[in-house]
Length: 277
Image (cartoon, rainbow, N blue to C red; front, side, top):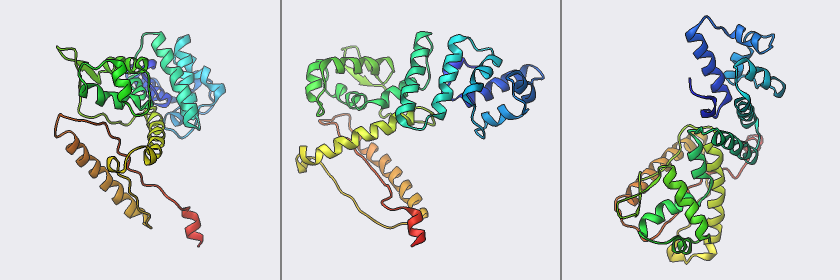
């Protein structure tokens, strides 16, 4: 099975550990539970399925039962904390510690680059901007960004994008994109970073209301009453619209500006309050 440092879900790791042991021997959930000091024979099975949470006091016992080394136990403990954390800020801090542990032991968390990419608006902006300004120095690229950044930040961002395989240099030393677009998949930590980026981009949108000429921006919105079925249909329509927008944007390799399109659909009322009314 994969190394524990490649996981972001402790529940999945427990499930995979059990499946791996089961495939090699007559290992059972009761045996696993007993080795970790649990009286319930199905406790760890229920934890792996998300029915129960692993208590802080039990983390060390479970890690020991799975024969994890010192740094592996620390990483496993952080995975448990990440899963149980209630806020994005807490999850973000814990995941960064997980990345730090993995980096220190020359391991790569498969979701790490995805998390780092969506953690900062500079990554998607410079991923679009650098190929459009071939040969431009970091200071020139920094001045081209509307939210002000430094040349050092540009250099660090470009280095990450190349290391992550999101940009590469051609024979002339120009940056080129390896893929037309970047999107998220079913991951554990990346949604935390994506929500943070939505907050960043939302703040930029507010600034653009006053800071960008009206003929260079488009803002519109509607307020309407809908059913849950209509909500689902609208969400699907937005998804299809995004696909059409991407097709238009990628139809030509040329570009003269980097734009952000936010599409938001959120409630302005409390469902329970409407029912009472």
